[in-house]
Length: 243
Image 1 (cartoon, rainbow, N blue to C red):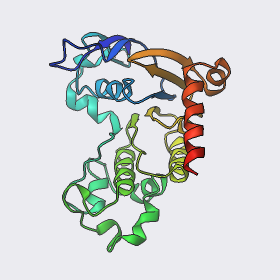
Image 2 (spheres, one colour):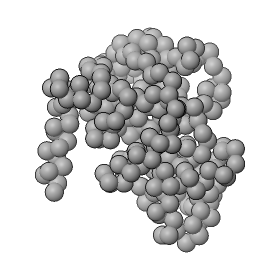
Image 3 (cartoon, rainbow, N blue to C red):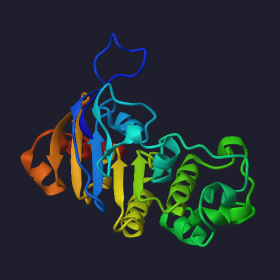
């Protein structure tokens, strides 16, 4: 992402959602994007998949402006797990394998996404028919199914947009551990409001008010005592109060 400025269409009288944001993800590396609610994290994801184009600046893939790449071709190279999971009125198996070359990875992706642990609760396992938008699954089960679907496509680039909000911290940790192994050698962008979930990323950027205010690895960002440290400390206090 190169010097990107962005406002949503129809909001030209409002402030910028992203302001001069630049970052680079090397092939095979993991990038984490963190920040408070409204900082612009999910907007970055929307630009990466070309739901919108930036007002200024460029989004590049392998050095090419993604506006020059056919939309279908671009999205074939991206395994995206959005915040709002969409499931079809079909079997769980069909939802996971949508667009996948074959079903050889079905059990593997179910294990990585921790969906396998939910199968005993479903009447027909993978062949359970899902209601419209997956109404007969819990929020956490939907998110795990969406992760399994993205993994089954074997994408070169994997984008996880705060897609673990409905699972508990323990399950999230297991999913992220599995993803680190499954995505070894692939490029990944993980957007999360839980900072503990991204501490092992190769690089972390911190957004605040649409601006990139910090970047680095977990240890260095903690030592700097800046915005990242503030967010992490606040989350730790909130978790202690919940207990």
